[in-house]
Structure formats: structure tokens, C-alpha cells
Image (cartoon, one colour):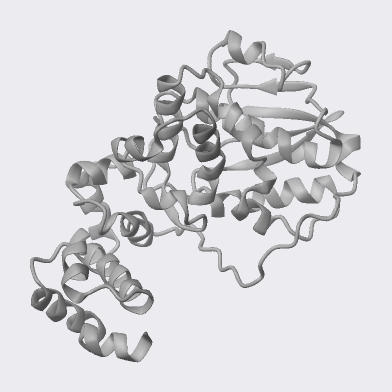
Length: 329
């Protein structure tokens, strides 16, 4: 697993193909999500930022449980990469395949913070290459998902029957991948430095057909460069669902709790301060958007009673929860 110094985050919309594919084969997602430390909110909140490691653990778990060796590829077939809401939102206004791929490379880290795509033109080919972090020990399903996604970005312009001249995988030889009808007749190579596909340079000037209109009112949150902000985004979805233990923090971040504390101190903050801020954000949302009783909100946030929660909220906001709700509800 590659070393990283921040918490990798991903937009929940990237999970949508995985969820659709899992439901198609009857996987009991509601039972699996807690076991991989993934919040159930990924099922219906596509623009939510969630920790990335649990997402790929989910893909691997489904592949193993359902004996689907090409599940990462199957997921992209259920919902094309360019139809994922957060990707579609960020690839508007591109008129050629080259512009589309360059935009995809530029915005990918905003959708998935571990991603690092580049478009390299060498001789007769342009190579779309994924040079991002490897976050899980079993990377095959992640790489299938990634390579199929890259292929689909080109197919959006070149047609669904298009295949790359070459496809590179970093994983060791796998006959299931080698025999896949969705990747053949491209030449498939394993144990390469990076995952990549070869695109004839002549295709780069092809025009992009008009993509579906998007909702201009959507505000797309991006991954942050600071550990404090990424940690807050990572843990906020879990508040109200489960008690956030040191083990859960380590599982979703890929960073030990001790290292997490040390890195936060270097940024001039602490885990308790970030947790307080996350509780504040969750409390504001519940007070503004629901009629949930204060006692229930208190318990969801991990407080023993409403009075303790009220004192904490007044410290954060300068007003009591009741006064805040009157002002914003």
C-alpha cells in the first residue's frame, strides 16, 4: 500500500456503478456496508464526500462474496464513467476528445483524491495513464474499474466498439482479464508500472457529441489539501450512524490514530477539535432540514442528553439549538 499523508476521499457518485452492479446480482449491500466501514449515505447522496479506502474494500468484498472475478469491470458496464454525476458535471464544455481527456485528467483529483491521470503523446499514440496511489492490498478490482473507466471516456467519442491498441495493468497476469470480451481484441499487458490505454493520436481531434444537460444549481465539493478538512469530510457522514472509534478512523483513513494526531498537531489542531466541528456541521444540517427532536439529535451526535448538546452548540454557534432552528428552519 502506498504511503500517503492525507485522507483519500471520493465522491459517493463514483459508488453508483458499484451499487447498481451489486443490486443486479442480488448482493445484500445494507449488510456489507458496515463491515467495510462505509456509510449507508452513499446509497442516495451522490455528491457526498466519503473516505475512499472503504469504497474499494466494498468492491473487493463483493467480488469475493459473489465469485465475480471481473466485478470492477462489470460495475462500469452497469453505469458508464461519463454518466457518473460528479464526472459528468466536470466534463461539460469539451468539444474534442483531447479536450475531454485533458479535462478528465485535470478534474479527476476533485472527484477522487488519490487519482492522478495524465495524457502523454508518444509517437503514433496518446497514452491515458493512471499514476495515482494504490490504497488497497488487493488492487485488481480497483484497476479493472479504473481501466474500464478510461476506456469508456474514449468510447464516448470513438464509439462503444472501440478498443485500445494496448492496455496496461499493474497487477499480475489474470486469465479472466486476458479473456474479457470488453477489453479484447486490444493487446493486454500485466505487471506494468502504471495502468494505461493506448489511443491513436488521430482520434484526439474527433468532436465530442453534446452531453446531457446538468443541473447548474449543484455545488460540487472538492477534496482538500489539508488533513483537517479532509478528516472532517471523512467522519461527518458517520456521525449518527456509528460510534467513531480509533479503529474505524484508522480503517477509513489508512493512517494510524497516533499518526493522525501527530499530523493534526502539525496543522495546529486536534482530533477532538475536528470531531467537534463535524458534530457542529451535522447538528446544523439536522436543525435546518429536519424536525428531529433535540434529544434525538443529541443522541445521534454522541451526547448523553439534550442539555449537554445545547451547551456545546451554544459554544459553537453563539445561540442555542432552539434559537438556531427558529432563525434557519
